[in-house]
Length: 174
Image (cartoon, rainbow, N blue to C red; front, side, top):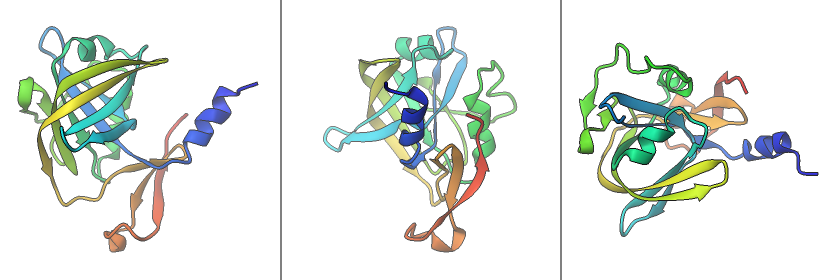
C-alpha cells in the first residue's frame, strides 16, 4: 500500500523556499496564500509555476485572475508565512501594500518578488498548477526563508554564500 503520510514525509526531505502568492479576488479584495510549491520553468519565455490545493479557500480568486505576484520570503518573514498559511479573512490587516501588475498586492521586505500574468492552468491531482509569465521582478539582498522536513530554516548569517550549513528556525504544525 502507498502511505500518503510517508510520501509527504519523504517529500519533506527536499528543502524548498517559502513564498506568498497574492492576487485580487472577484470583489477586488486582496487574496494571498503561503506556498512552497514554487519552481522556475523557462528562461525564454520567462515562466514560473506554483500549485494550489483544490480545497483552498483562495482557489476561486486564482482561477479567475489574470495576474498574480510571487513573493520569495526573506528569512525574517516567518510570521508572515504563518499568517498567510491560515484560512483567515484578515491576512492583510495592518500590512502596507503596493500594487503591482494587474493590481496584484505587493508585500514589502521580501527577498524577491515576481509579478506575473497567468499563462496556463493545469490539473495536478488534488492541486491546480498555475504557470505564470514573469512580467517584472525585483531582487533584494536578503537571505531566504526555507522549509525542510516540516520546519522553517535559514542560511547561517555568516554563510550568506549559501555554501554553509542551515539551522532550523522553528517547527511548523503538520
